[in-house]
Amino acid sequence: MAYGISERRACQATSFGRSSQRYRKRSDPQVALRMRLKELAAARVRYGYRRLHILLRREGWAVNHKRTYRIYRDEGLSIRPKLPKRKRAWRYRQGRPAVGGPNEVWALDFMSDSLFDGRPFRILTVVDCHTREALSLTPRANFRAFQVVEVLDTLVQLRGRLKSLRVDNVLRSEETRRVGQQVSAREHALAA
Image (tube, rainbow, N blue to C red):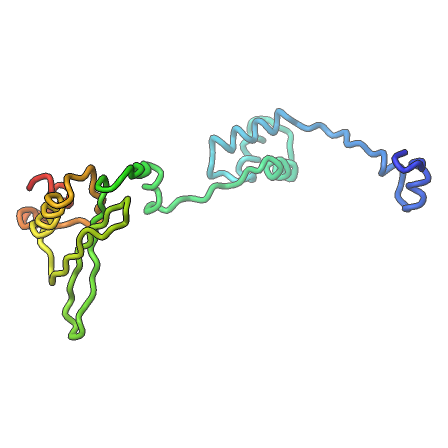
C-alpha cells in the first residue's frame, strides 16, 4: 500500500500475476556444498568446475554438473591462468627500496647506436634516480669493465659515495672472459 492502492489492483492494472508477486524462493542455499567447492578450488587452483564436480561426486555429494557450475560461478571461482616460466620470477622479487634523496641510488645503463658510416658506438649513462639528473654520458666505440669502473670512480670523487647502484646489464671482464663467468658492474666497482 505504498501508493494507496492494493496489491490485487496494482497487479491487475499491470497484468502481473499475484502469485509471481508473492513468490519466495524456498531452495536450500547449500552452504556446506559451497564451502566444500571453495576448499577444493583453493587446493586445486588449475581445476575447472568439471574436474571439481568429479571430485565432489567421488566424495559422495549428490549434485549434478549444472548445480556445480552455478555455484562455481556464483562464488566467483575461475581457473587462474598459468604463468609462463619467464614471468614466474616476479613473484619472488622484492620491490625496489624507496629513494630518499640525491646521491643515494644511481642507475647505470648502455645505449647503442651507429654512425653515418655504419660503425657502432655505445654511450654509458649514469643517472641519479632521485633527481633524474644525468651524471655521466660517456661515448665510446666499445667499453671494457675497467673503463666503466673508471667512470664510476670519477663520479664518486665528484659527488660522494652512493648507497646502491642499479644495473640491468651484465659486463664481462678480461679475467672472467677466459673462464666464461659473468660479473656484474657492482662486483667490478667493489673489487676496484
